[in-house]
Image (cartoon, rainbow over all chains, first blue to last red; front, side):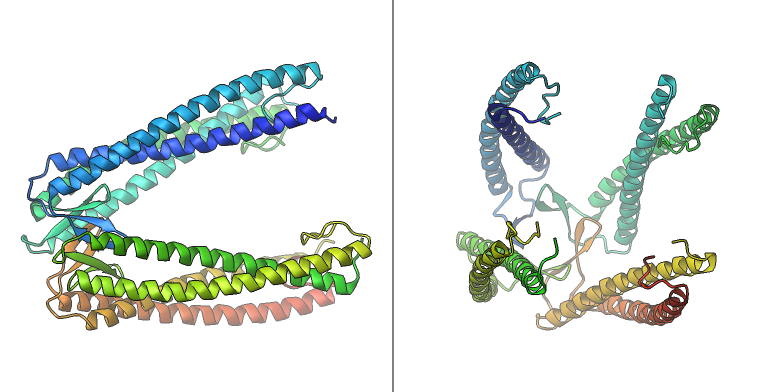
Length: 124
Length: 124
Length: 124
Length: 124
């Protein structure tokens, strides 16, 4: 059954929001994992003597850090950057979720009126 | 041919047990490989002089170990944790296998009575 | 509907050009990424003291470099090789793109005459 | 069209030989690559001073080698083992290729007599 042009258009937009939501959620999870690793590494470093020899990767190389403090500063900076970006992604994800729920509701009603049942993004 | 509701339900449960069994078997193999690697690394370390310089990974960093003994202690701990989790997974896998065999038997009989042949989880 | 032998042949050649173009574009992107990494590593090295201890990978080993200068020389060489190969790939990609556009135009016209619509490489 | 039981059986065996051949060829290529890397690493090591500090991977650790000579000995051993296994795989691949060609010839004739055309392992 052919849907009215407006509904077809709304469904396409709904699917785009769904894809954006998935993509943002994936990014958010990836940043969350990086943040956890940075925090975990910082915790582990705390347990080590100050004069521990540490190498960090630059490109394919391993370069000796000036000391534990230098590495902790670099990691803390990275951690803070990750936290800022994570918060931005969480906000974005929240907005997309709201939009998604709203569109889903409107589409379900519109499809209902048009005599179609499903509103999970697939035409019946 | 439509199956009776009870049989359909039993088949779904059977498939869930099958999936659980596969997932647990995969985890068991993954822990088994980690355990083998830990054991192999400990064996290799034994052949090295006590004052050998060793770096171990923390996050993306490489951090110098206090000495061979420290690394051997960390690895032995890891090995023991892996052994405990491996045993738990093996037990879980055993229970799931029993359940699987039992359900398979019951389903084969039930499908037989219902006049259906296969009982590998797929409806005929 | 069967296409004339000449058109079928032209379509096959067109598809081959399309595949070559994709393969060259992928190689170009891969070399571009390697170049960016080399440039980035050189930039990072500049910020480090001259006597920084650096290890570079050889096979699965990590081998201590004579010094920062040695690593910078090796990386600069690598960078220059990458730049030369990247330019060659960009030229090749340019030629393939021209060929692709030309063939697409000719095929669209030929298929048009033969009463067929699409010219994206798929027969209708 | 159903094939005679003997032919069906021969086709199955032929497909098994084909799969074995592919699997052995893949293993051979993988060992060939490992051998090339070992040779390349040995060549690179030759260019380095004898007192170069070298770390080698053991499990997830990096362990300092006693010296360049130790690493060269380990790599030479590895190279020799790889050469032996590579030769065995090449012999095996040769035998399978012969068998494959022979079976292909016989099958083509048999299918020809049975009035079937293709003999690439697929029934027509």
